Image (cartoon, rainbow, N blue to C red; front, top):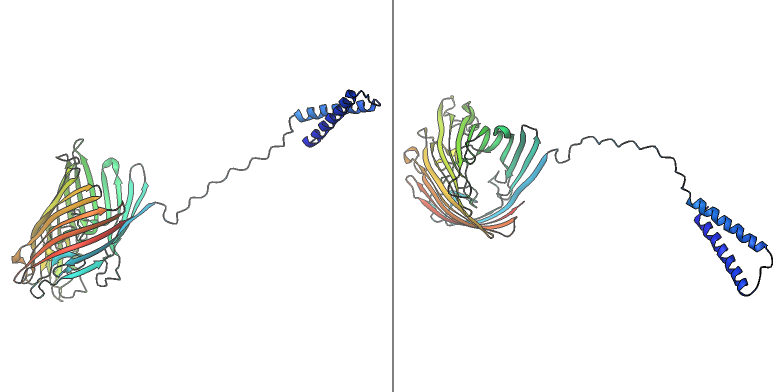
Length: 440
C-alpha cells in the first residue's frame, strides 16, 4: 500500500477519536457500538500498514553486467603523433646608413665610395621573421630522438615585399644519454666556429670577423667527463662542400659537388670552472675541403682547398657580464663568411687567405634592460686579391634591448663600419637600427 493511502487511514482514525472525545466531554455516549467497532477495524488496518511499510522492499533482479568497453584503437593525431612545439618571432627592422652598404637591409660591408661618396640610405624589412618546430620523441630506454625545422624570410632578396622562405635548420638528433653520444643528420650550424655575438643586425658580424654558417652534414658528438666540474666534448662531421659555379659555364657544374668528396670538420672543447658563476668553455676547431673548378669548356680544371683553424671562448664573468669571442685563420673561406666574401682569385686562380676575429660582452639583464657591445675585424691578404677587391672590413657595435614583457622587445643598435679596398677609395658607414620583436 502506498504512503498516501496510509496517511488517509491515519487521518480517519484521528478524526473518529476526536469525535468520541468531543461527545464524552459533553456527556454524550455513542448511540451504538458500531462506531467503536469501526474504529477498532481502522486501527487494525493501520497496524497492518505499518508492518507492511517496515518490511524490506523486494529486490529487483540484478541486470546483467554490461560488457567492458573496448579500448579505442590507437589513432594518429591530426597534428602529429609526436610532441611538436611551434616557436619563432616576428621582427620588424628600420635602419639608416650614412653610406651605401651591402646588401642594404643588413650590413656585411660598405661599398666603395669611389663613385658614390656618403650615399645615405634607409631600409625597412620584416624578413628576419622566423618560424620553427621542435620535434621530441620517440624515446626508448637507451635512445632519444628529436628534430628541428626552422625558416626565415630571406630566401629571395630581389623582391622586398614578396619574401620567400629560407631553410635555416632541418635536422634530426639521435641521443644515447648513458653513452653521452649523439648523432645529427641534416642541415644545421657548422661544427667549427660555433659562437655568435648578440647583434640586431641580421648577419652577426659575418664578413667582419665572425665565421661559420649552416650546411648539410652528418655529425657525431661524444662527451667525456673528467671530474665533477670538468668535461670535454669531441665533435666531428662530414659536411657538404658549398663551392662556386664553373668559370666556363656557370649553369653546369658546382665546384664543391664536382670534387666528389665532402668537407671534414672537427672540434674539441673543454668546460671548466673559472672566474664566474657558470663554467667557461674553450674550443679549438678546424675544417678542410676541396673544390674542383672547371675553367674552360674542354673540362680543364683546378683544385682549390678550403681550410681554416678556429678558436672560440665563452666566459661568464659575473651574473650580469658574459664575455665571448673567436679567432680564425685560413684560406678560401667565403662560404664560411671569412675573407669578406672572397674565396678564390679567379684571375690568378689562387686561394685568398684571411684572418681575424671578434669579441663581445653581454651585460644584464637589469630589470627590463639588456646591453651588448662588441667589435670584429676580417683582414684579407692584399697580395691574394685582384684590383678593387676588399682587403679589410671592421665593425664596432653597441645595442640596448628593452623587454616590455616576456614576449615583446624593442631594441636600438648603433654601429660603425669601415671597409678598405685595393687601389680604390675606402668606405665607412654609421648605421642606426631600430628593431621590434614579438616572440612566440
